[in-house]
Amino acid sequence: MTSIERHLATMIPLAKYLTSIATDNLVIKTLTAENMSEDYWGWLNDTDITQYLEIRHTKYSRESLSQFVEAMFLSDNDLLMGIFLKSDENKHIGNIKLGSLNRRYARADIGIMIGDRNSWGKGYASEAIKGLSAFAFGEIGLRRLYAGMYASNKASTKAFLNSGFRQEGIMKGHYFLNGQLEDGIIVAKLSQEHSV
Image (cartoon, rainbow, N blue to C red; front, side, top):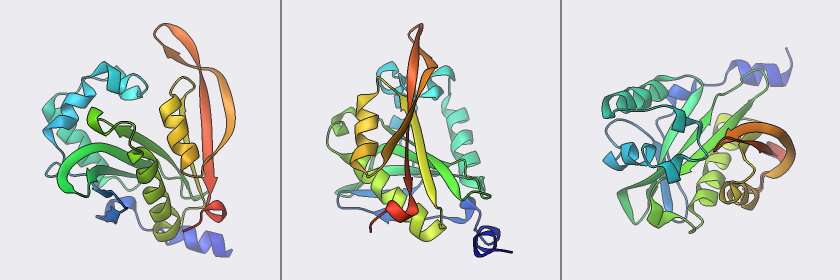
């Protein structure tokens, strides 16, 4: 068994990480039904907020959203975290998700949503991506993180590039948006490219 195989065999299931990550302006903590805000449900029903999210194709009730958060909390391969302002830890401004984790290759994707409109354009997405990346590489021991986004979602692309990710490719006609084909952008970062 190689050292990488030994490491992967000992990786802790993501459900075991009840954690909090502090950055300059944010506290990123495992999302639970107890700490998620009522605003979260509202964000999912706002087409401006969800226009680039696949979740826009699903209608959530408050009950089904609580069930989704609970399922993510119990998942061994996904880590859903709430993004809260450090100045007011009760102010839930968005979510960031690590997973689905691929243990064989020590990689996972990242998805992010800043739902609070007053928090847009303040660099919080980049800050959350950097914080979660440091945790994923340092604490979990992943070697690769990646994300995919709609080509017209310039804010998301910028947030990842500002977080040290690099664009790896364009997937032509990967999505449908407003009845039109839309290209997808793939960005990624390797653990050896991450500086603490």
